[in-house]
Amino acid sequence: MMLKNFEIRYEFLTPLAGILFAFSFAPLGWSYFAIIALAILFLSWKNVSPAKGAFYGFLFGLGLFGFGVSWVFVSVHYYGGASILGSGLLTLFFAVFWALFPALTGYLCIKFKVVEPSRWFFNVVIWAAIWVLVENFRGYWLLNGFPWFQLAYSQIDSPLAGFVPLLGVYGTGFVGVVSAMLLAEALLQKQNRVILLSSLVGLWMLGGLLSSVKWTTPQAEKMTVALIQGNISQDQKWASGNRLKTLLKYRQLTEDNWDAKVIVWPETAIPAFLSQVDDFFLKPLELEAQLHQSDLVVSLPIEGESEHEIYNGVLTLGHERKTYKKNHLLPFGEYLPLQPLSGWVLKLLGVHLGDFAAGGAQQELLTAGGYKFATSICYEDGFGGEVASNSRDAAYLVNVTNDAWFGNSLEPHQHFEIARMRALETGRYLLRATNTGITAIVGPDGKVLKQAALFETAVLKGEIEVMHGTTPYVLIGDNAILLTIIILLVAVLLAEKYYFIPRAKG
Image 1: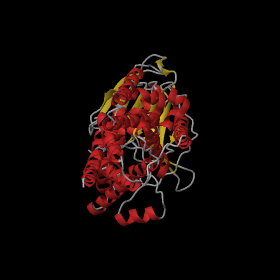
Image 2: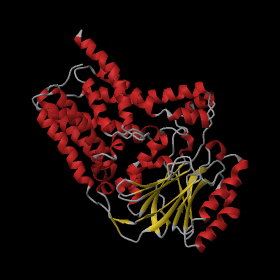
Image 3: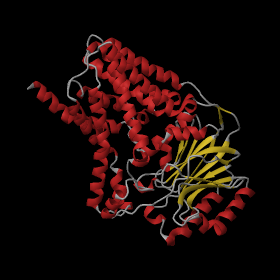
Image 4: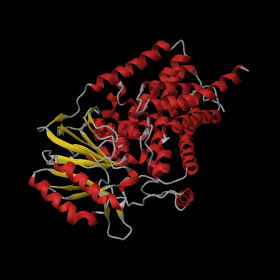
């Protein structure tokens, strides 16, 4: 009877823990809640079957994604044109689908867990490795990846942020899961409590010490930059009658800031194809940029060689004219995976989405202000390994995005948190220009230096420094870190077999 009541309690606690986990991310940013929430989840996985563990993991995922991705409804209903019922069903399906991954994590963790209490270290390593590997599968591989709510992002303002330039998102996530496991074990094991809590404190102190390390240093004079936030409502942006008004607005905001060496416009700030606006709008603007010895970074759709080949692009004007074409596309936003099923479902719900082509991984870096920069468009800033690879020869980072699709929801804050991680990982300044917010200048330590208010027309001006040097993460990348985690997991599992450490039954 006591066991039954214990399990029923976790049936209520695990979804609440999922919501608590969501609170650790922006805009609330209560980073320590992530460790507490995971500790609750790990406690629920003690002395249960793999099936029950999967169930608790699923409930945790429902709490996390049900609360965390509520912005899907805003996007699909208000800007995608779907009905309230259709938007609600699609949002529910979205949350349920991603909740399957904490469920998978729970099943695997219990399937491979070690029963012997004195071998708690083995479970710490096994569960942390499994959590991170499932995060990687969800965040990078499946359906082109959904990197939202990966543990490390919640720690960008905590002492664990010190591990980020060293280990990236997945290595820092591993450290975070180890922290939660140590806390959970400390609550269960009276005899090892001092060791467990001392290890936890030591890990966080190490993160704090690492935060003081400067992996990169300035190598040139400061450079003035201006980031344009046009604040064009998404439901008005592509209306043909508003195109000229939008172009004139961006032109005026730019002309008032020609003293900046680099001026950046947000994603698809120009609501027309390059061929439609080049002669009468962009070429005169390009001449002005050259006259003022400035460089302009604009974004617009670019037509390809074939009739149906369209790219989401960035174009530099001034000292050099060159384009970057978005490569890592947003599933169900810029292309439709799982065809023809996904197309049929969205058509049934009355949702109409774009169909873009990928620009390719091997593209030359763009140049503005006399220095090369690494470009990411919107969703691309969620993939640290790709940004890090492009940043090796880059002096700074530029991200352009259009979070107007999500209105005044949680998403712009969550997305900005992800973007900040790229600056911290690479030790580079980040210039982030958005349509309605959050436009910001982020330092190489991931801290926000300047930020424009949401849903206001603004020009954010500031200074950045060209950074010299490379963080360890940029040198080794995600693959080496994940391979190390896999080797560690295999080594622990083999050690368990060799030394006859008993496994959990069920």
